[in-house]
Length: 548
Image (cartoon, rainbow, N blue to C red; front, side, top):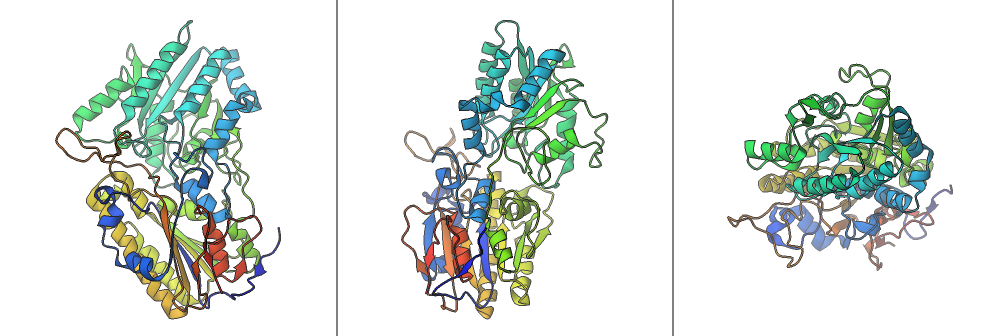
């Protein structure tokens, strides 16, 4: 790859350039549902008035998703920000692989189904049952079930995790009804396809960044061993849990196992085939390790079943995980971190555990290795409900970044504040407001530190969430309320644009907003490179500011 060229009219800031990603902080359309607007944000308000300010897209085709009705997410958002371009992402790639039948003609799919047919064994599907398109898509599951039947697989078991984060918070039964009707049709002709187990995505199976391995252990006991509280159907399990705890969200439902005649219908045993149909890597790696690792120290797995296991996609290209996968991930190259490292730019990346992988692995194009000039710092996240500590680790993160700014050891700093997203997913409005205020306070401290060293702040987001906390009626677009008149909360990401503020306290860049046609967050890379005093590489989406 070519080296970065010096900018023709701007030598770069005297101090470091700091890129702040305020996770889940977008620009809402309705004050009643917009916790960002409701929060006290004097620093962001000041930046909007005095810094170069623009609003940019962070969802749909702007981040490589199939349609502009698709919500952005932290994975594709950090990919786009870090590589400065838009690559087709998991959802799009899988849609295409199914439509072209490349998935079904591939070696891995044929190995999975041939094994189940030859062994007269079970084909298992584990994953998130929704159409949120962040981690999975029920359409992909249905396509694979239909093809499995066409290939003669007699017995299929589905281990369905309830969502409630990327879709409405209590919508699980909608997907259960859809899947049960689909399975009823598939079972004509003597086939045996059914749901075998499940639970809420924040209770079992979908931990990330090694934050809570007991979640994986609970998932293993539930899906693989078939051990847990027994129910006759997924509907019965969900309705029972809701009756036992009023107001429980789908993401928090306990684990359950489906039984026939008192026995679990679908434990995973030797000779079976298993597909993890989630395609996003961060919450798939730990379960994959449990299936693939010869030695597992994180929990007592018991005897590892001798199965053929595959992921929907490759979750970590550097580690080669999983060994088998159905669709290849986007081949992201020429990331900003690599360009800056080649140019000798000293880089500092930091977040807390919940978003550490995003500001490192995903930012670097799904690359788990550091480039030569990079320093990565992880602040451990609290292991508690996010609504209980909505400030999360914003203060320690800010402390470390201020030290990095003052040290003179770094030229480029990137930081992720997870608060607006992680607390936004809880649906607890007062906590969400407090989380946004914590981020604003951190941004203010960074502004003060950068002003002292003539640095530059670029402050934006990877997608919206806390800006859109109430469900909208799809026909009237009015805020939805329950029978008592209370607003119906929403915990999914939004389709709203996100802000970008470019603050140059020294004024040497003479930064002004560039005139661009529907800019997106991928332009944050070129913006950062420009403020460092370089010309953006060929093919990068343009900088959001002109300088000099």
